Image (cartoon, rainbow, N blue to C red; front, side, top):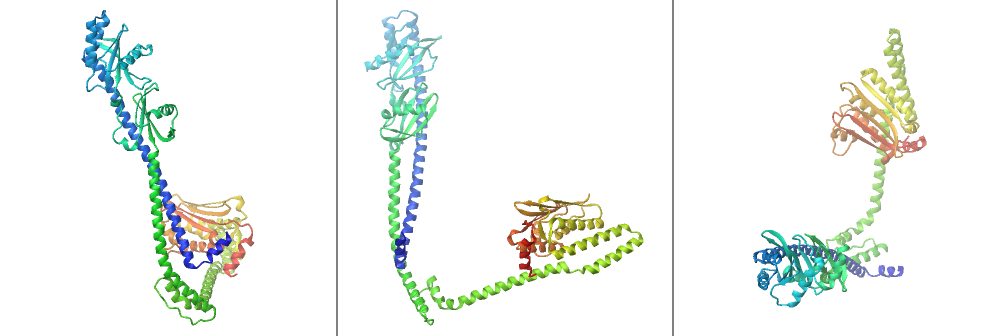
Length: 595
């Protein structure tokens, strides 16, 4: 295989282009042809099945209507011709020859152009059988056998009984009643015209469907279509076992089973016609694929001749440059990509390395300047206050407050002094534990509470497993300050909750307040998103500084989310890697801050 691939890649470009293009076109056309053929086959099968269902349903409706009509017509004719009354008269007393002749005439009058039967025979209650005029003695004999069969002599109270004999003839049996007064006078059997019971319609000439009907006792009564005799046993099997496809006499059929008014219709659609249509679709697809392949091959041959000529000229010129001839000049033969490549070839080779080196140097310089600027801002925020001067001033004010007896002011000064001392120590460490950071936040909140009163309520929660986790100094204080500033002013006081926990192996810190809230525009501005107008006060800049520090120290591993609605408070969430050792943070600190 490797040797074959090597021989292929060693071929001329134009030959490889022709072979590759022809293979791709062939594969695409074959794939499209296969997909269309499969889809067409599925559509043809589904269409055939749907057509079978519709045809079977319509034939079943027509059949049940014809059966009901035959049953009603047979009964109404027995009354209108006087056959029922004559049967009642003959049953009441011993019949005479004249009465029998009169009954035969009445039965014969029941047969007309509208009747769906060709012969009628009745059985009186005394067991005597009388039939209409006969054109076929076999029908009379079969009718008499059915009437004398004990299984058919039971009164069915107007419910008709359909029977198919072994020779395939269909008979209709039903009770006969005299209407004046209404009383049972015997049984009637009519030989039915099968061709008038079932009509498949002209549409079936193309589908070649067959439909077989069974009565409520599961007996096959009549069928229509080209393959009824061969499908009778298969249809009987479908009655007890549902199946979408069956095979009979070496032919595959799609099957449909429908029920209506006690009748069951089994429809069969031979799949040979569907298979022929599928073969036609496949042959058409293959022919179209072959024509498309030949056309694509001709177009590729014409285009590749022009393309490979220009590429070969360019390759020859590259060999001359490789040999040391830097003064080579390649004529441009067109305005396409190869022509542009040809025109830029000499200048690109001379300037590419210098341009790349220049871009790399400029990018490094730009990043170094950004890191230095952020480090400068960071150190400026931490050391812009002279701690010794503040400590001495606070001690002096504390002494004066004690002399005046103002204990509340003295306590306030002591808290403020402790807060500055702790922050000064923390800033020199660069990295503190979550527990120490939250202790500083509690002091900061206490100072705020002394200033603004007890209406400001703060809650601090730390999960035990993150107490010793490390994080940069003063990373949370701007967020708490933002909540203290914008959370005040609500009636009944303001609640602020600061929490630290572990989620999915990361340190998650949340600052929540129930203050005035923020609009989406304000959130975008605080987070410095594209398109947001960059303006705001000191607090929003402090929050933005926190986000910059997180990205500087942790990169994409840290992020900040702000969830807020006007009038419903604000929740700021920080997520950063969970570190328990200073050494895990300090390398990033020293790399980016220049410390």
